[in-house]
Image 1 (spheres, rainbow, N blue to C red):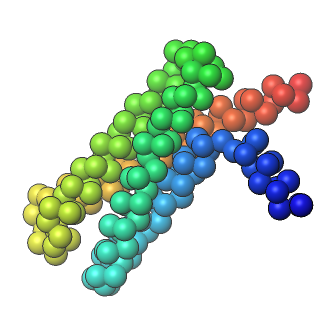
Image 2 (cartoon, rainbow, N blue to C red; image 1 turned 60 degrees about the horizontal axis):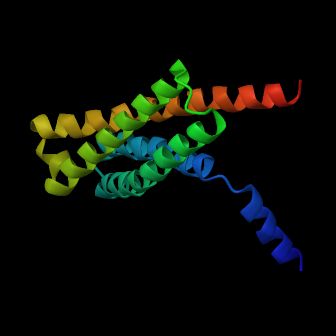
Length: 153
């Protein structure tokens, strides 16, 4: 019986946006870490891990974006506050950078060994994704902390 109670509690309290957002916010820094580990070692396993992490996190971004928009409209009535506009812009940047990085890597599997413009564009898009998720988490944290502080006043 406790198992079914646990499942019922999860169903009642589950929030898609924090789960999807934290997923990308956790995976992308690890992808960048493996990218950094690839440079001194040249180990292809590190570079392959970057691609796998990129693709997996890229799958979570649309869920995070959709659920964030849904929650914004439901909880904040679509308020045009700067924090929401910033999060929307950053989310779009994250999605575009992720798609661009994935497209480059899938189109040119040896991009990390060939050098040139595509190499630098691939690396740059991956590196852009790191501060993007940090800022998304920062602004999301400000919203969540604001809700907590209002709740306990």
